[in-house]
Image (cartoon, rainbow, N blue to C red; front, side, top):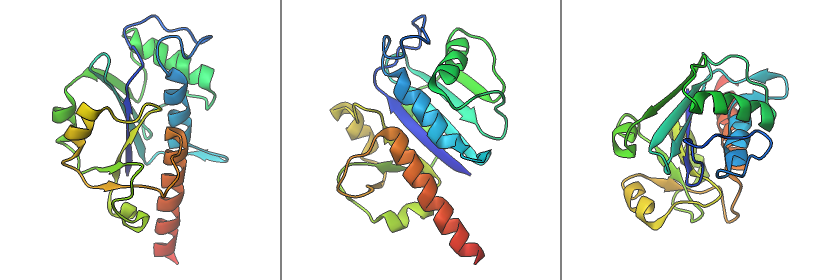
Length: 182
């Protein structure tokens, strides 16, 4: 099971979101692309993934569980439509949306933090199943202090988009898992 945790600095989940303007209330477009990168393959859907998004503006957490979620298409507008329903309090299969502090939430996991400064080799990434990734704003200085408790790794000297980071992680984990079956 893979678990990606995105730290969203800008999305306001209390606002009445418009699927016609995904950046009007924060970078919802970034979150939508992370959903696609987490779950979709060209020929299938990853059921072995959980995506958690920590919305720092509102103190909310959303978890999308691949084994249970239904009816999400990979395009940004469709995903935004689903998220708008969830943010407004409607239930959606496989998605839970609730309030919890980051410290309480993260205490259930043993994560590694993806950063732009190399701390550990990417070869160690397969030893974890929970990955903390920043959004387009990265991690605030205050939040970085909270993350100091956890091991860090990078994907090299380049800084990738959050969704690209998830795609690369999925590729690296897939490749490692395939090597175990050969």
